[in-house]
Length: 67
Image 1 (cartoon, helix red, strand yellow):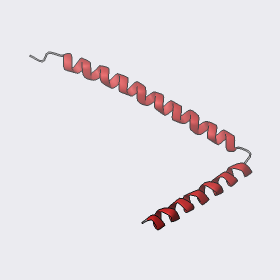
Image 2: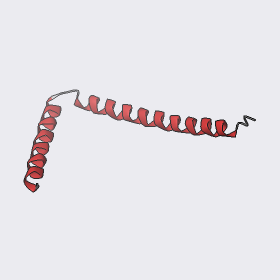
Image 3: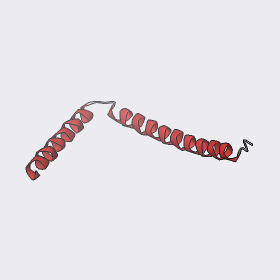
Image 4: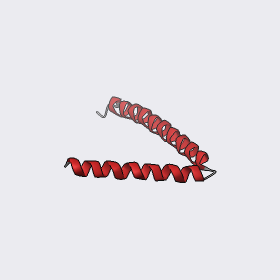
């Protein structure tokens, strides 16, 4: 089992090294990273707003008297 884990670890490390080399060769590598970070921040904000709206909606729904 440890041998398989070591092989996976080495393969992942090699993949990361290859990705870094490719990113260094591209002139737009920083732009792509910046775009990913901005999109991740926007998604986090959207999730937070959705959670707040959902909690307010559920609180309002639970406060309704249906009798």
